Length: 502
Image (cartoon, rainbow, N blue to C red):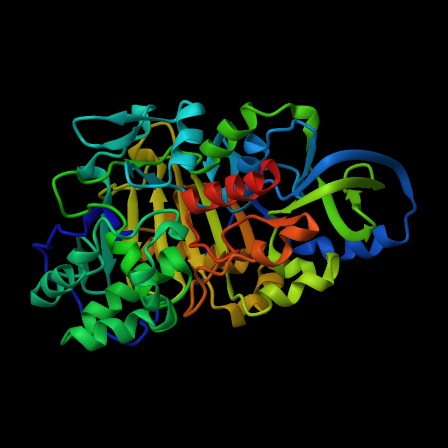
């Protein structure tokens, strides 16, 4: 989360440990309801669907698979209104999803974005302008958000907890931090978004790790790498030894974080579901199908026959289309359309778990919007405090990121959600130094087994549409060689739609 405080040097002492701390896990008495959401348990539904004959058949020009930012932006960008969009969940949003807590929506995925420099991709910026989300500010020389009530003031933005106390950001102050800033300064203005616009002369940085880049140019102490690793995991799902140098540099240099025009931080309580709502408002609702699992695609001549299982009605429908825009998770192609799965077989995904803790009353202590928890546990990213935005929104949203190898733990979490809630409460107890379970009214868990594609070495600039567009099969989504960021997802949908519009 340190993008927002990149230049702000800590006046508080930091820490520089390289090993994982262990938190003393104490038994927690839970006397409140726990609600769990996940799309990982769809396998048995698909097995059931295979034996059900198709009850109806419809025709459309374009079928869009996936109702996240990418799929919905594609739907907004097609010249023809003849399309159907299918989403497997009962609501749209994907990794930008939200859930209702106490009558209000709160994020369960991506939860913020930042104002946009004018050198970003004009197609995505034009769509955001069309949705009345942003406007150009001549004074700041960037596109800023129109709903000003969702701008997080700098003084409320962030605090970082460590085992040895608090500091203002994950990278502690000192000569290493200054050297790190100086190293990255020449790249400011060159790290565009979407990343497909980045100049060829920088693309060799995609072939080495971020750690290799840092190690080549800096004498660094362990605390610098500790802070950078935390930030890379937070936005990219893995540490700087696994993330490419280009992805790492982009994190710190894609906006003028340390210049005169620092970006504004925009975060509605529902997080990036705000953008989902805006995108949906421009689409004919009859074109959107929720609770609809795409489980089989076959090509018959010039057309595709796609079978959809509706989890509400338990009926199977066949959709015939000339085009397909596939914005869903690409790992599912192994079962849905196997011939294209090899294109994505090397993509690594990090699983995530989000827990919304609904509070009866405020927990005593300092309240900031983002509360980083550095090296308390390797998978713990901290929590967002919605009360800093609205005194009536007493919800803490905790995020945990897992290694790809830990995906097997996700079914265990769904089978026994109480265990991870207890673990989360122990972290909150440590942060606030009180028994926080006494303040909690309910817990809402979302488990995402393939939440975030990791931008490893060689990952970027690998658009598979070059290999499939002659078949009228197009890909959208950040797992098509994009960074796992909102504007990248938005642009990927526009880009796929424009290949059809040509």
